[in-house]
Structures are given as C-alpha cells and as structure tokens.
Amino acid sequence: MKAKVLMAASASASRLTASLFALMALSFLIVASFAQSSQAIEIKEVKSPGGITAWLVEDYTVPIIALNFAFAGGSSQDTDAKLGVTNLLSTMLDEGAGDLDSQAFQGRLEDLTMSLSFSTGRDFFYGSFQSLQANKDHTFEMLRLAVNEPRFDAVPLERMKAQTISGIRRSLKRPDALAGLTLSKTIFPDHPYGRPSRGTEDTVSKLTSDDLKVQRAKIFAKDSLKIGVVGAISADELAVVLDKVFADLPESGDLVEIPNVEPVTDKNVHVDFESPQTSIQFALPGYKRHDPKFMSAFVMNHILGGGTFSSWLYNEIREQRGLAYSVGSYLVPYQHAALLMGSTGTRADKAGEAIDIIKAQMERMAQTGPTPAELEEAKSYLTGSYALNFDSSSSIARQLTGIQTQGLGIDYIDKRNEMVEAVTLEGVREVARDMFDGNEPTFVTVGKPLN
Image (cartoon, rainbow, N blue to C red; front, side, top):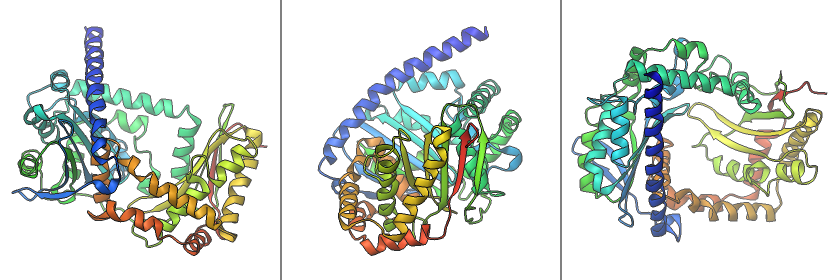
C-alpha cells in the first residue's frame, strides 16, 4: 500500500510539473510589453476595503496572473530547540488545506494548472502564486486555503520531514554547502543568522504539527505583509482578492526582536573533507541597503568580483592563473547585518594561493580603486542589464515584493539606474577603503588539509 501511495504521489507530481512548464512558458511572453526597459513598468498601489495594500502591474498581454508576497520573520525566528521549523512550514502549506488532504490538494493544483510555492529566507517568509486568468476565482481560493487553513496532517508531515532530513544529510556531503554552514556559524556566533536555516537532523525529526501552527501564527500577520501582483487583473478585482485571501489574518504577529550584529572578521577556519577540490568562502562587513554608500559599494563589488567575466577576481584567479573555474563576490544586505561575501574552489595545494590573490585584490581596490574606464564599464553593464530582472510576470512580481521588503519606495525602478549613474570614482574608492583597508575577511576552507 505504501509503495502505491508513493507511486501515485510521484505520478501526480510529474503531471503537475508538466502542466506548470506550460504556464511558465506562457508567463515569459509578458516581457514583450516591457521589452524597451524596466522604466516602462507602471506600478499602481492598490488598497482593499479591508486595508490590505499591494503593488500592481496591470497587463493583459497574456492571460495570466502572478502574485508574490512576504511576511516579516524568516528562519531567524526559529528557536534553538526548533531549528528548521520555518523552513518545514514552507514545505507544508501546499500539502493539504481546508477539506482537501495532501493528495486532493495537489490534484486540484494540477487540474487548475496553477503554481503555488512557499520559501523562507533569514528575515522573510515568501509565497509565490501563478494562475491562468480564466481560473482565477478557483486558484485564489486555493491560495486562501493554503494561507489560512493549512492542515499539517501527520502523513505528509512525516514525508516532508524525511525529505528535509535527507537534504540536510546531502548538504553535509557537499564541500560548498558545508563551507556555507561553517562560515555562517563562524561570522555570526550566538546569533540567529549563524544557525542552519533548515535545522539539523535532530531538531527537524522532533518537530510537530503544533510547532508549525505556532510558527505560522507567529509570522503570518497583516502588519508586515508585502504583496506584488502582475498580469491580467484590474485594480478593482485585485482589491476584492486581497481581502478574500488575506483579510482574515491577525493584525500583528508575535515576532522575536532580532538584534543587529557585526560579522566576525579575521578568522581562518579549515574543515577536513575528502574531496578533489577545496571550497573557499569568505565574508567581511558590507553596507545595509539604506546606507547612502550602498550603491557605491554595489558598483565597487561588480568590479571586484560581481562581474561574471570581467571582474578583477575572475581575471586574476581564472584567466591569469587557471586556479578555478569560477570565482565571485556579492553584497548581502540582511535586515540586521550587512556582508560582502564570496566563494571559489580550487585544488588543496592551490587554496592558499587563491586566498592570497583575493586579499591582494581587496588591498588593490582599497589603495588605488578602479580606473575611470572600469567604473564606466561597470555602470554601463549594471544599468543595461537591469531590465533582465523583469523577464517574466513572476520575476516582476518578485521584484515588486522585494522592493517593498527593502523599503525602497514605489518609484525605485524608475530611479535605480540614475542612482547607479550617480556613483563616482571617489565614492567607489571611499567604500573600498572603508571595507578593505585594515579589515581582514574571515575565510573558511573545506577540503583536504592545506599545505
């Protein structure tokens, strides 16, 4: 009987995946209406009679609707004893709701050709929805059920716990994943950001349906809700939907206050691991999203390690010496911390050399900074490629939600490229000195013992 159930679930999942591919392909056609630039997007603020606010990009190019939303409170809200509960919650919301058990719920998603998924970050809990316009009354009801009436039945709960634990075990066998876990623990000791978002095998195995109910009540609340909607729906129609889906949520949640934290620097941690390649990850303090210097840091990082084939790190580590296939760095502006992080991988006997090169390029950036030509090239790329963030209805909805969670304002899309263009050579050199001059990164290596 168990085998039959698993086979049925697998077949249903395959059919659902196939139908969703068609929906996803259709969603990419919406980019035609925004082909000239991201500035062509007109965002409307919609407020429902019940007080729910959303940002809407109304477009009827293709008959689909995409909706993304976020609640404040991600995995940083997990307690030590309940690590992984928020992640597990995200896996269970489409495993049965209302009168529909897991199999019936998944079957209904398939019948309606709709996409529904949930995920968690460090600071926010996310939901993503996509539907054909013709099915919107039924699909929004499915979203309402998942958000308001999840079942957390025993059988799917045990299945999702087993899948999560299997994923945790696999990650501990991957050098890059192990390096990431070690780096977080090293730079954020005794802070929620330093704990594994998916939990541990021990904590996940002990989680119960009651734990999920408590965590959902803690996070799901209207006062922190941010919503982005794109597609074939009017502002008046959306206002009705917002109340239908979200109005019954409590006004406020019960979030634990997370303290601000500075990452620990100048640490070198090695984890012995039998692997042909050594994984290298590093981090040091960056700039929060609302810092006036953030955009200068963003452009500076593109030159240092953010440009896929044009960055200093890529040129020095791959092109000049062939030490690694890929190398890069990126800014991570959490709500309560800010980082510049990066990673690469190379042979164990070359790991020390790769680390020295990374440090040398940071020092070079602090002492001399980029040339005027490098700055202009970076700005040209960053402004020209911005429209690629809006290549489908779902990606636009995701951008709208992200802009809201970061508190950047409804006109950010219009202003963003102007902000990049305003970055000066001295501004880049200033943030480079602030970040790299006398400030040693923390490095984590995972692989064979270093020479």
